[in-house]
Length: 494
Image (cartoon, rainbow, N blue to C red; front, side, top):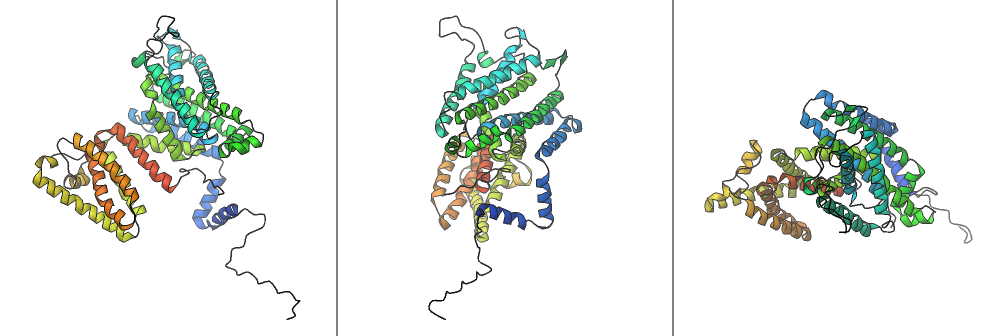
């Protein structure tokens, strides 16, 4: 070969991945995964994606409408009604957090404002008994205006700063309405009972229009269902509009959105007002069915539940609102019963161990070690402290019989349960600092301590335990699927 001749290029090997000009690599990987979805499962997935989303929402509405038809159990219908309320609240929060990306920790105050607004305009409190068709528009507009006013001084805040301001607003609402039985204008006028204080506002009117009054639980279920379908339809249209796309741009990168000429501050104000309006609408239904409102119904636990729904289903998705509310709403009711909660608790522990412990020999070693450790501790306590095994587990059957001879159950477990709970917190923190075989060995007494705390402290406090278990479910989900059940994975270039 001559010195001046060119060396022919080496043809690429077939197994070498070649970048494509003008094609985004992440988009290409998505296309590859789509092409890989072949067979029956792949065809089902592809057909499933072709169905318009409104069809799914309509299908949910039709299925939900059959609940009062297939059962006359008031408890089941009440759970369905509460789940629909959670869906409505999650829709409003989804606009602020899921679309606009604004961390609003005072959202539940708008829910309370709507409930109190309806109670003041439709009850003997001030002798006002407006028609429902007049009260609801007034309350919704007033709540939207309140959301606008709350967002106005905080429109330039982001992240933690915005969260602190909205959290202050939420706590201010609870304080004012709890102490609202003696309110005056800056101390210059005599005191008036505006909110009823801790006693709230009783004897609230039911929904009434054109001379007809809605009183039954089944009727309110259908009212809440119709409201939800109307609101989700409106939110769906807004999502696909210029405003909806601008909100999503604001969520992804506020600076880039502003550089593209979007009115960032105005978008924040509109998002707060729209979310507040939906919360206010939900408050009217809540007040009408319960015929009484109390400030305690609109505190932090309610806010936690709404955020759990949004995170679990996937922030920024409407289908996630439905799925998240169904999972959380039903779970909260199931966890009211200590026996059901116990089964769920131990099932979660076993599922987590199976999913996380590798190799399999370590899974067997940890499970066998935990069982043996428990029986040894139980035998030592039974021989040295008889009262330490006089208690009863919260569940019966085979599981209860096994726990009876495995977990130490004192007759009066309150004090020792509190101490063990604190010890469990430190044990978990210590476990996160360990690695390798030492961590897996330390997992054995930690698991037993977890079972001890559950049986002797947590299971007897269902109101607290329900929130703890929901938190555990969220932690597990965030590790397995950070975007939520139906959320889309966000890709960041670093």
